[in-house]
View 1 (cartoon, rainbow, N blue to C red):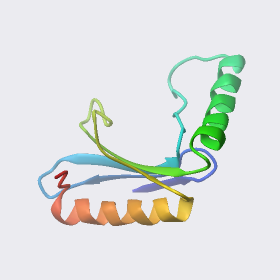
View 2 (view 1 turned 90 degrees about the vertical axis):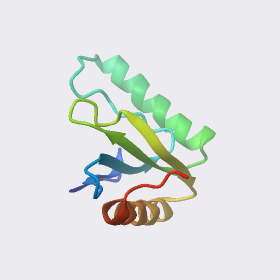
View 3 (view 1 turned 30 degrees about the vertical axis):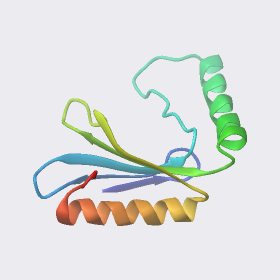
Length: 112
């Protein structure tokens, strides 16, 4: 299942390899930090979070995108970061994410 929201969190896909390990593969703006969905936050916290993320993306990461693969389980879907790569733009990152997702579904993830 692929979820897309290019303005905020990019593209995310949940998948399982042939051995039964579950993964989340995500292509998102570098510097993006997901807003905690279930935590109560105020408007000022949200504004600081959004503004800080935008500044980090523009100034520190120069508008680049990142592809991250997490291995997890039912309790913690993002338990371990398996792969993290940076790309110049969204198109490159999404293409790399789709390639990684296909490889994981066919033969698993080789981190070597």
